[in-house]
Length: 361
Image (cartoon, rainbow, N blue to C red):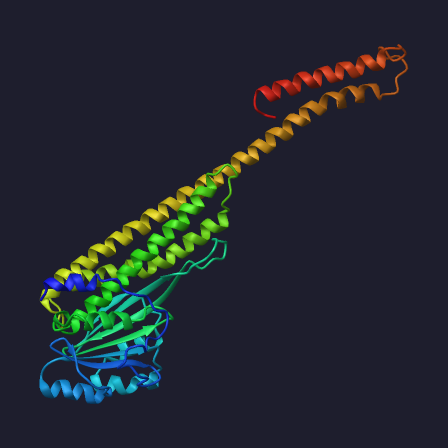
């Protein structure tokens, strides 16, 4: 049974950016409830039941669990489920108002886990204001006989994941912790996809910075660093919760799944290492860009200085002969003017050749 767990979780998963109601058994059960189903021995039971009916069915039979999925519920919409399952008020507040960092909290009757979801925002060309990473949240309440998922944001739909799990009953038979693992694995897989896409943007900026034209403004580099920071805020805090799920004995988490949480944690470490490497690379690209700007400014200053030196010769000579003294050398000589102009041109030519040879012009 466990041997199929990794295979099932690694199946290709389609991405949906809205609330998924495509499953035949899914109907709008409320303004926020996307799905409510009962699973016994990993098999979804027929019928659409309200949450109170579903949990009574599970507890009366003494087997199975309920999986309720919600999308951005209001406090009023969530109130009935809170009372039914006895969820802790602090966790409920976090689930309703969102904007939480990834974490794992333990309460008497449940676990509360927060995941930051990320999505790469497609764009034709990276600009100084391009949005690269869009974030959302998935909160998971896990108990002995229930899983409640609360999703915030326009991406990260769990509909395809639910259908995938339903196709592998032996995985769902492990209970609510199997769902928690599948969600964690899906979220971290999305991190890997986003980091791969961000790497393409970094490669493009790097190529432009080191191109002959020397493109790639600092604004775009700073924008990438800001978006990378957003990704880091989603990824880095998740390390501790996954380590706890992988190594510590935790209520409502099947010990047989801990190995697979460790696998997810390894993938998260890989993402964290990539983000750190990207940040260091962007720092190097930014320093290289600033060095190029400095070199270009120095070259401009050298050209300006060279032309100033050349023009100083005629300025000096003409300044001398512009003085109104009666007795000046060659002033009344027929060939004085051509001689002075020739000397000026000769000196300017020699200076220009010297600057050209030294690379100043």
